[in-house]
Length: 125
Image 1 (tube, rainbow, N blue to C red):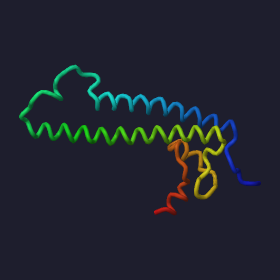
Image 2 (cartoon, one colour):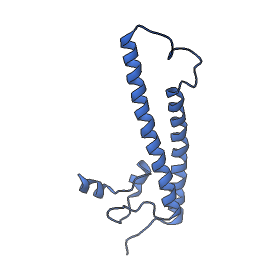
Image 3 (cartoon, rainbow, N blue to C red):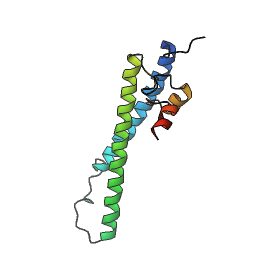
């Protein structure tokens, strides 16, 4: 029996549904993070009123920096999912970009935007 070189249309449709579901959730979370970062939900003056609590200011700044990093990471995740949808349309989804072999379905279900097999990832270490 010959080894599969790509996933069939039915399998790609399954992955597409999974990715689209994850994309909706990821975009919702991203928007919530942005709203928090930009104080969209607040009409208060917390970010403009003078304060004399230096430690609280430091903690607030650190929290905002951490949230900004999480937001950037979420944006990268969204771009990865969108790129995976393009690969599905091109019928190249699930093919390791290093080895050319199929990435196992189990891995793609856990990391649907993966472009490397575990084998290829381990070779990079």
